[in-house]
Length: 338
Image (cartoon, rainbow, N blue to C red; front, top):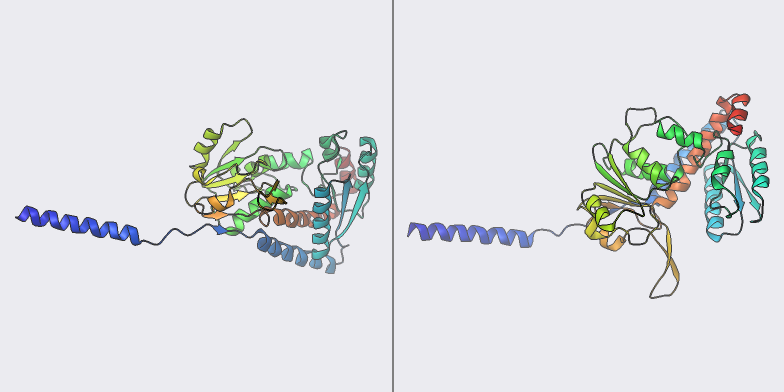
């Protein structure tokens, strides 16, 4: 009889536990990180920095943008950059060149802008026409004016954890993570994409030593690329605390690949045709609606990393204006010729 009573109590306790499981609150969706909101904050900081700089008697920072050809996306990006410059008090100009410009002519223009002391920041909008070597063009821009952070000197300094011009998109990703309070020290990170302008710098920023001149994230970083089998990628992402998708492949990262509570940063910009409306729309590399049900944090596309890229470009332009005054003309000429 005692055994029956004991068994009845066990059953009642089990039923109570089952009831608790069924009535527990459903898991909340991921926090959607607003890149627009963070970018506004950074642009306010930049605006205050510019005004302080000018009030101290310095010339207003100036950004020169070289735009080659008629690529609609490039024209849109450049317009966003010049509007942001005006918003924070940076003067700017856009120099338009026809797509048939020769590489030599473009190099001559860059040399003129390198030696023009009224120009603080200089960028050549990518991509360039096929007949022009993009690496040669990036290396032609003076490192002290290289607000894109693409010159080999600036890339090298970044890899050595030294202060430098950081590429705007990776720096934007870094600021999203840090300003949102997502921890990186000792965490597992997957960066999907190994491009030299985005994937590789993001990996460098996240894995390097936080005690160095240019502090890093002290994370354990895995980089995947086009030859990484999907199942192998899934094995890495399922244990990742942070996933950065920067491969340019729509729906590369899906909910079944994500650890519950992970932070997912979507750098992808892909134009696809909407099956319902037939119109083109922007999507990232992440299945946003699916992944947001499982992740802890997620960035949208558009409105995530994109606005941050433009904001960090403004920060680099201010940095360039201050660096030019700190460098003797001889060093600037040497940097331009390197």
